[in-house]
Image (cartoon, rainbow over all chains, first blue to last red; front, side):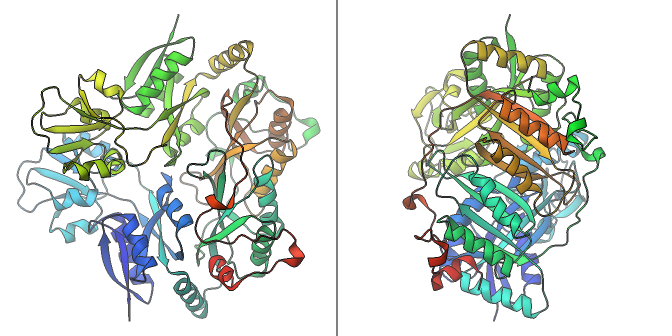
Length: 319
Length: 319
């Protein structure tokens, strides 16, 4: 028996690609069902109608903050798998198309394919989504969309990979009721998965200097590696914050349990948002050639011998 | 002699509102000039053609990540003022309009005014920006845009504040060459401003457990209050990160200088991105009624007496 996967439609969206990938990856993953908005996805999961697939983090745009906020606030919903999709655009046309004069996509899609549009002398027209542009394409139009759209809407590929820059990736979380998320993770463990990552939300009940440093000391002292971190204002309550950390461990591992126990015992609010098999990542030193322009970096690591230059004053704005 | 303010056009965008507010606020602020993209704004500043105004952080959508990345990487550009704009939409129509059947705005604008659209039975059509929707409006159309657009494009106000939820705010930074940013800040100080905030980017040259905690210990031990924090992957170099912190202090204050000196002496890369007069903010305790649904919060603060409930296992996914 398989479980349906609810994603943000229309068919052919990047979330649809993620849902299709999840259906392949997860043994119980079944039919992909398009939903009109993210609220409907969370409702389907909370009502036990299936699992959800939502965009989580892009290496270009950062967190998809509305989805982050929704998962923090969702009752009885947790992520148990993380799926990456390369955000690449194909230029698609109708079979037997006429002269091509117009290009359609979501405004973000148009912005990410600006060179292609200029080279082909096309006029940009925005659509509500890239998939909608592909679905509604006219015979004098080019639609920019995920490669999946060619097959879905019976279109021909004019050019592949027409985005200005390669390497854009968006990660998606697969969501389930918490009991099912635990079962899926237990199954992954029994299938030999040893290493996991977890996303945890913390809300310290006091505010002021050092609150975050104290929290992160607990994580460091337990030896947990953190790969992503963000603070979020709590909506409608200026001056209050939640913190969302991604850690290289599973919450049932002893060191992680110590962290959760210590934080909870301190009276702070805590919730595990997602746990999923660890992704392979490099762990390189940062070499000077990949640093941004400007800024200050001293060659000496001996504090007593440090000498700042006049340029450093400019970069630090401290004089 | 005044300095021109370069913002992301077209005229009437929320960034234009921010630029107009900055022109009022800053003694030397002059003419507002629309630019076609953010790169052009940074170029204008770097070339000494004036100052720039860019969107920085929204209380709904979070950081405007492309602008954050651009400022980290910009040579000789820093922020010296921060301006907040209430993101509210007016429904605008042409004078002597006909039957109204269509509503136009950027897809985000359409999404934020869904109740108004349903109540008036309008058909949604996306535009490349809210300001463009107002500029190009037809006689049977309603455009959703900032209130400034009514005057700019000679439109009538059909309804004010048609957004689904109030309280959305976007903050903008005013950018200048670093030497001018220092002059502006010195001028603010001589005009009586005592308290400042600063945004600083850090890149630790090693990666692994504890790197971030060690950094934040330095900030806490100096007694500096942090109000916003985010980690960002360094583009094209998986596994490497920059950290961007907003602190309640100026880099020329002794405690802050200690932090910058310690971090630089450790061999890490550091750059002050912006310094601006401190905004008044409340500093409330987080009370239980504003916590998200689910999660764990123990009433006891005595670790030895802590007792977790079965529900807590579900929220933490640790059993």
